[in-house]
Image 1 (spheres, rainbow, N blue to C red):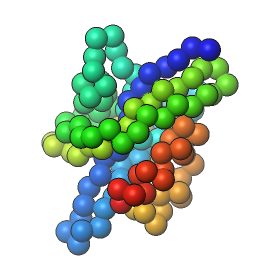
Image 2 (image 1 turned 135 degrees about the horizontal axis):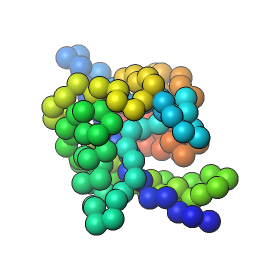
Image 3 (image 1 turned 120 degrees about the vertical axis):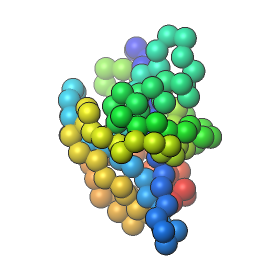
Length: 133
C-alpha cells in the first residue's frame, strides 16, 4: 500500500478572555470533499515537515504561521493508501486565513470540537487537540 506523508497545522488562538480556539477547514475538492480537517498538505522532496507546513499554509490560506512543537504523528489506513500525518501546534504570525482551496472554515472550541464531520484520520488526534484547548 502506498504511504502518503503529510503535515497538519493545529492553529490555536486565544481571545481576550483567554478562551482558546482551533482552526478547522472543510475540503473543497477531491476524494474527501466536504470532510473537515486540520489544514496542511504533502511534504515535498527535500523539505522538513515544518517547512512543508509553513509552505502549505501560505499556499492554501495566504497566511504565515509559526510552527511549534509536534503534537503527534497519526498513522491511518484509508482504503487505497496509508496516511502518515505529522501534526504541529501553530500560531498565526500574519495574514487572515483566506480560503484559497477550502470550502469552509471555523474556529472551534473544546465544546464544539466534535460538531463537524471530521475526516477519519483527523478524528484520531481530537483528544490531543482537546487537551490544548
